[in-house]
Length: 210
Ligand code: GTS
Image (cartoon, rainbow, N blue to C red; front, top):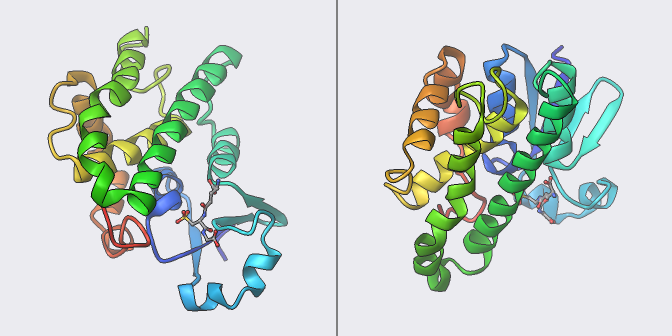
């Protein structure tokens, strides 16, 4: 029985980064899929802490909030920097990922038809901080912070991959981010996961927009 369970809708959504982390780290997990029909019945929603999914189980520990789940796995599996300094830099980077993810999800779910052109125009401004972080990494920029992969790298990689689908070429003017995506995506276990039906068989978002 795998130690971890993800309870979520049949989408990549807010679980893509967690799944990438687990797959790349060679960790097993179980998926419990909740269909929209089952969710609409309301009982499960009423029993979730914030009335939302994902729900993540680690033994008797039950977690909600996708970023808390990533941080938990980061702490547990040595993916949260080598010291407090790296940890807070990772927090800062992850909060930036969350800010852009929130904007992306607002576009996808609330304003896709009317908002996409402006969103794509603004994208360079939104992506530049991540290029800057890579440039500032004294360890060489292979990872967002330090010289070892962290939970934020999986979260940022997912964010960049979904933006490349929304706006192909959006990384062309960011050499470090382009190389970062290519390098991380070619890590053997991650590459195998990204090519697997477990990933490709799921839509990115619940409404089919991407
Ligand atoms: N802050 C939460 C997190 O990061 O986990 C947001 C979770 C969230 O928005 N969940 C959505 C949900 O449960 C699904 S998704 O946006 O992640 O695809 N929606 C159903 C509902 O009833 O709110």
